[in-house]
Image 1 (cartoon, rainbow, N blue to C red):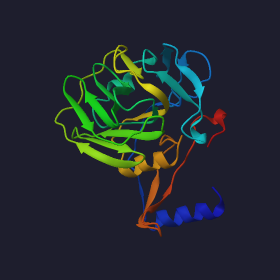
Image 2: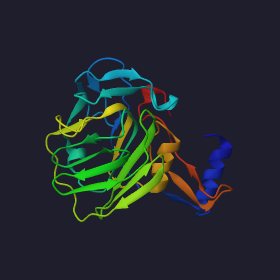
Image 3: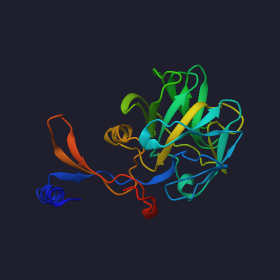
Length: 262
């Protein structure tokens, strides 16, 4: 941070004009930048690496230059398995999942990520679906297009309502009355449970947070492809600028010093 930016930050803070965004933890982050091998790396804490199966094509063009490459799933048997762990186990409500998707078709139900015992998220034709297993399907219609990149997200809050987003904009809220059940031992990328609702197309930059992100946070992640909210709190002025939106100061990049990507 240069001296001018540092002084502006101090003045905003001392004047009481800035507020910290609610704390959130990035539980898993699958950048899908691998170009070889069978490991699907979790770049958040590294606690939830997955195993690719079925012949997933790696190194495909990504959603944006800042998201790296993507993984191409064939819609038949391509997927990744991720063992459950403490951070994922507790995610039965108050969570958000986001991803860049480029579906090969928009005429089927296909999953991005989930667990057969707990919850799954994906596409329902050209719309979106979030399922709390054996409890409820949360469905919204949409206008996703085949062979076109889109940023999709769902925030499942502590009231058990699901808010859906496409390209940073909310497209619908579906109310619920219960959290999801505890997960089984395996999470999946690119299918429902290793047997059905296979994803056909490209997936990139899958992120899961342990809170229901605000609309501002989801918009931020759409407008900054490849960024995450894992480097600390974002600070926002309460006063709008000339665009009508408040100013934001945040840290972008990787938490790994070796990545040289702050």
